[in-house]
Image (tube, rainbow over all chains, first blue to last red; front, top):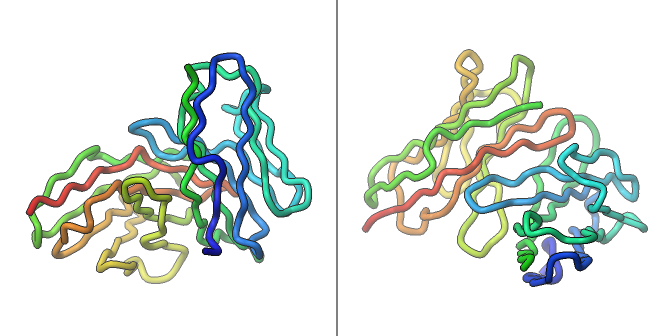
Length: 116
Length: 111
């Protein structure tokens, strides 16, 4: 399967612990997005990369969240000192961005985080 | 920032009946519009998109949507639904290099 993959699929952690999620995009895609989705809500933009450059971060992204895409391929999202409010589904998506205008985003299955 | 409003959180409909899922967005400038579907325990999949041109857009699985600039709407329709259409549907706007999603409409097809 050559779609977007995310690891782990589920993560249960205790409040105050750090967690890291990984996203592997479709190989030729240069853009990678991270979203958070809570129950009854649509995906909420967190940040995106074009190649290895992080071009935009949501104001909702607190300083406990950090994302990297070191070689322009896979990306990691780390949450430090987790809080119960961080419990959500974290979605990754990738797209090929040749120029102006959007292209289809392909979504991964998500990582469900539960903070106890 | 953009906002996307999906007016109906849940829509039950009988099999083979028509359905319309409503979406309104807030923008006075040109935007790009999308509908995504999320089946249980799966990632989001693109149903259709409007970038420019004809205001009636056809997508996969028999769905279509009509862009109405004056009403800032992008409603999704299907003339005859199937059990397999039961899923969560999200309307999204692309603006300023970001996607803004609505809160979703849960479509339940009743046999």
